[in-house]
Length: 119
Image 1: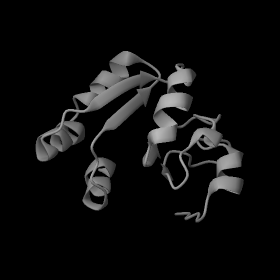
Image 2 (image 1 turned 135 degrees about the vertical axis):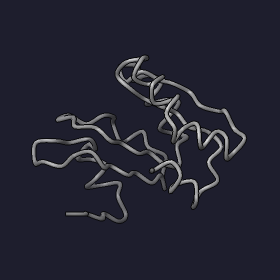
Image 3 (image 1 turned 30 degrees about the vertical axis):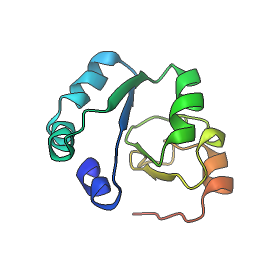
Image 4 (image 1 turned 90 degrees about the horizontal axis):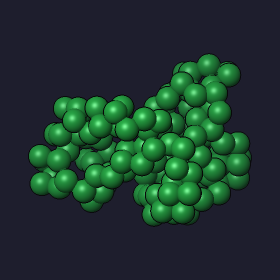
């Protein structure tokens, strides 16, 4: 579970769930891994933002995020990486074919200090 593993290295104080639909975001919110994070950290600071709310994502979420984790099968980037906070850790785990692309080219080519690929 990415939530538990990430929290072992970072002291997460807030999670923002971004999803295409509110029901799917709420399903994730009530999943065991997220509930475990809430219970283990005595913290219920979780926001839900819908994917089509690019204004919020680009101007409120990305500039303050320490970690961004994506896990989709999209063929188009999920966000504009120019809005990422410098030093933000991006973990794109969903794209597994050459046609999928969760992270935009600008982020990969111009913002990344290190790129790790698991094949």
